[in-house]
Image (tube, rainbow, N blue to C red; front, side, top):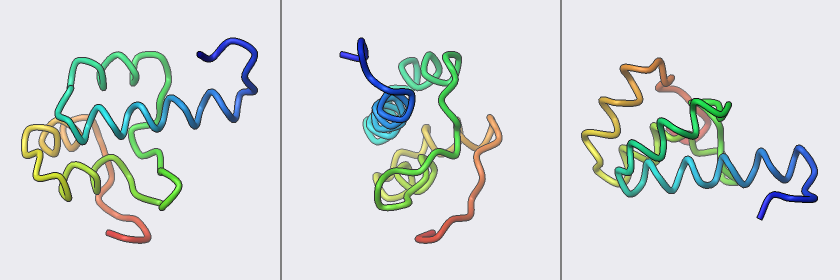
Length: 78
């Protein structure tokens, strides 16, 4: 899916996948995405960070996991 994509398109795709993993408490997927370079504080198109997504989705384990890895708790819509 990423073959032939620009760096911007690739980064947005991976950021979206990271947000989706956090929303669904798929922490192994999220860990892998961090290892390949996704920013733990990346924002989606609505300027939500993964921590904001985890809080909104009531994913307590994901919130703890993100905070333990240095996620920031501030943002435009926090």
